[in-house]
Amino acid sequence: MTITLRLKKQERESKIVCGNGVFEREFPRLIKSYPQAFVFTDENVDALYGDVIRSLAPDVPVYAMKAGEENKQPHTLIALLQKMAEAGLHRKACLFAVGGGVVGDIGGLAAALYMRGIDCVQVPTTLLSQVDSSVGGKTAVDLDCYKNVVGAFHQPTAVLVDGTFLRTLPRREIACGLGEIIKHGALNGELFDRLYQNKERLFDLSFLDEIVPLNIRHKANVVEADERETGLRKSLNLGHTTGHAVELVDGKLSHGEYVLVGMRYEMRLAKTRVPCDEEYLNRLDELILYVLEKGQMPSVKEGIAYAKLDKKNEENGTIVVTAPTKRGEYALLHLPFAEYESELLRLEEAFSC
Ligand SMILES: NC(=O)c1ccc[n+]([C@@H]2O[C@H](COP(=O)([O-])OP(=O)(O)OC[C@H]3O[C@@H](n4cnc5c(N)ncnc54)[C@H](O)[C@@H]3O)[C@@H](O)[C@H]2O)c1
Ligand SMILES: [Zn+2]
Image (cartoon, rainbow, N blue to C red; front, side):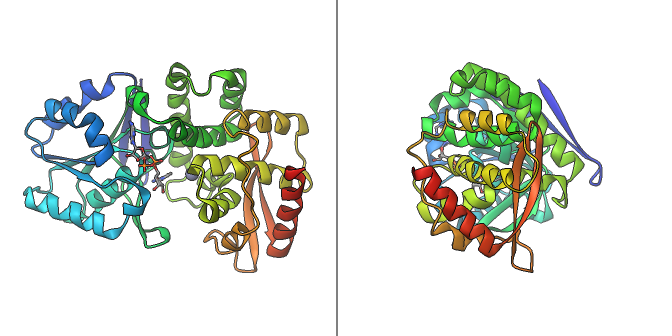
């Protein structure tokens, strides 16, 4: 299945090709369509798929970074750019980023910077990168502890989404991707129904094959409507304000699981402030608990201070929360810090009862 992402302002298209076996079929074909190519990956993916990559693209240089968010730093970006220069890449070359969101974000940024921009093809190998980070053209590295502060918009010319990569992915990384998938479900009624009807199958690779393209279509629609994140794209922050703040201080769960923790708090904030469909929110909560076990509700107390520093906050000391309200609907809640803090502490007590 091919999903086309049309970017009107840039007069560009991004082809997202999904399906099992897509990598083996499309990767050599795309490599051949460029005069020069370069593969960027990480050491874990290289250990698992390096042989396949090299057999499909025998003469293409491969550079593998040390895996992990802690290496999503300028020094890795510079090392990659140096390898690209040493390989003699010119402006008509293409960088293939084969890996999770870390590889995709650094690879995309290197492609945006190298000779003021070369083509990039994303090959996402984690569930999160397949349904989220490889689509939309946001690229970045962290600067010490400041996440994603050095970045650029650079749309990939193609994205190859192959479900067979997920066979080697640890369960926690699947849970991570499911966090973003359930977030999409909270924004898209049809997707929600599909997830809720199949809640027992969330971790089945055959079910993920069915729903990954629906998630990509949802994200692509949002990106098409709002390329530069000025409006609708903010809906994708659902669960993230509280979730990310807890993630910063707790750090035991995966990012997607913290998004689910955030959603559990934020839907409860919505209930007492805006019209909500209580029955639907109960079903959404039930769905979340198929991924997030009840015992995995970390404390929000220390995270609240970080939520106050969120770059999406308003200047008047108000925090903005994108909260689910009804099937396929969300609300932007504008809460003064003090109110946000006291409500979260109250909810935490209720969770621990
Ligand atoms: N650009 C965007 O729009 C956007 C959106 C969401 C997240 N992100 C970024 O994405 C990053 C997180 O991405 P992630 O969750 O994919 O993390 P990741 O890239 O660190 O991958 C997670 C782990 O899985 C390993 N791995 C990758 N593919 C594998 C496979 N097929 N089998 C076994 N192991 C595999 C990796 O080596 C790594 O250890 C963060 O840096 C985040 O900021 C970007
Ligand atoms: Zn996220």
